Length: 380
Image 1 (cartoon, rainbow, N blue to C red):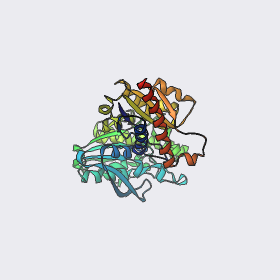
Image 2 (image 1 turned 90 degrees about the vertical axis):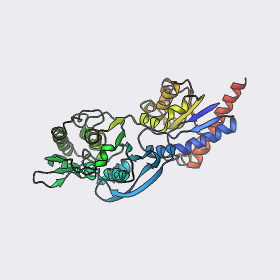
Image 3 (image 1 turned 60 degrees about the vertical axis):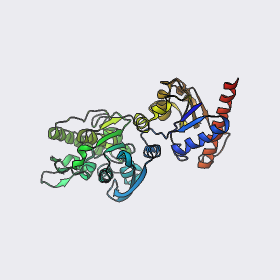
Image 4 (image 1 turned 90 degrees about the horizontal axis):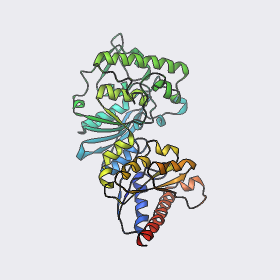
């Protein structure tokens, strides 16, 4: 019997790898099985950790420019053998780095993201996997591009471009001093939103308010994004403003598409390819997946649905476990999950249920009981 465990992290409790190991321990108490743990994520929080664990990488931590200009410590995953870097933009420019009363789409920028990329290039990386969820910014990625050598000039020839409000003041773009190594780099971006750069469903209108933008600021940034996109089109001859995902992370998606020739991919697909999940499940009898809560959103690009879709291609039985299961979890059955199980043994306080040791114990206990039943049925 071969069992592959590909579970998302349980936010606030266990990483994907730790959750997988807990499940594996329970299975091995109940069945003779070959068990493989494949860390998994969907492109959001925890993606870098899952990929670094899954590919045997290491962490690099450096000081970078935070979203509002203050120095922050950020880290990225470094897989030396593959010359690969795994970056979560939120580590350098995330909304969690900014207090609610400090959020400012006019002042925030993505310089720190570019500084992470630059450091990774100097270490020899040429293949980049980047998650762009959870941003505090709305600068069209100009801050990132500045850190990589691009120059944005106002009418007086002054260098600008490190803040959201600069987008409307840029009158010239110079790319001749960008890092030459960028031509050797491949950028794959985990992006699960399809918003264009501007318009009713664009970066400013949809995401601006939650990043602290007032109605007036949102309208102003909308005009600025249009101006910048038009200038970029005239300068580089590429119109990426309406590409799905261009509006992700305050236009960071646009910067990657237009200036770095990146590909934007659904997060779960990118992660599954990166860790080689398909090769693992090809001969699996059972695939165990899950996340913190199974609900209607699970089937919308989350880890369990993505894993189930792949596993079903090869005829595996798919079982999901979760910290909690709500009424709409039945949709998971329609998405290829054959059965799902909550892991809590009874009522308990949330803070107790989320303790890492308690979560690991509950995952292991649930997996053991599931595979005791499977073993008994297979013997009968």
